[in-house]
Length: 425
Figure (cartoon, rainbow, N blue to C red):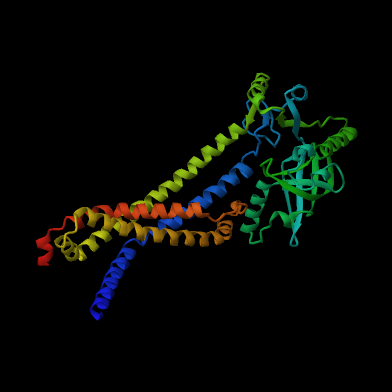
């Protein structure tokens, strides 16, 4: 009985030593799996951020109509810049295929934005555009109250928050989220004409931050269209000079998504540039291909380093265990059996590292938001989600495959060890 117990303990001890050597050999896989978990989380989060914050968030039945030869919205008025004329806007509104037509207007005034924060006053020139509340219906909290009133309600693009927080971070000041800024009082000043001339006028208005949106992505503010019309009318009344609005983009919705190609073709015949969800999807895909290329390059480096390290380590293990492999051959173990056992052992160790890397990666994700917002404040709006069980199985499969492939050639050496040379050692 004691003899059997001794043999059993010896086998456990021997196998435990083998497993410990294998674990030490495959330690590099842990970093590969952790990076893989972080990559998946970052990719998914950045996809949402890009499609929602950096690019226009269009539904399948919505289109964005731009002036001729204009590929992006020009929020700042420049000499010779193209706009959508009032006549073209009326023709768009008369199209039976469309159920909603929401223009975005731009003013010719120079606008300064003034805010006081922690005892410090900040004033800057900002682009301003006007929209009707129909364009933000159901997309911005309190959209029904977005109309011309005093104080003037302003909506800030989420893109602007990132820029503002970036500037605050560089000055050593705390950053702010959307909830912190709702109801924040500011002042906006409209100026037109050259100073000391009859055409020069300046109008100051108190305003409040009403909400935030990702419908428009530009470093400026959004106000009700009827407010801009009021300012323009006041200027014309005092100077006799028109200060009409420019239409820089029109968001429209089709009655039937099937008619979208025909509507796009008709608008392009009118000399307008049109974007739909398919165009935005293509832009997102191109951006993600660049991100994937960078991440896959880093993953490839991790993979090569891990595979070479594991390969060399398993060659050392084969040398250390050469007598045991030769003894197995003497006892009748076939080459294929030794090879399969060796590879399965490596795969098992890899799977365990896959589980460990999965949980380590998810643990790091809990700190990723804070770290990334500190390093890159412009990305503080990105929210990282931990992986689910599908990601766990992917990690186990990846790490097992890397470990097994790296151990395959050493396993061939182990199964073909020269019996007599091994015994002489």
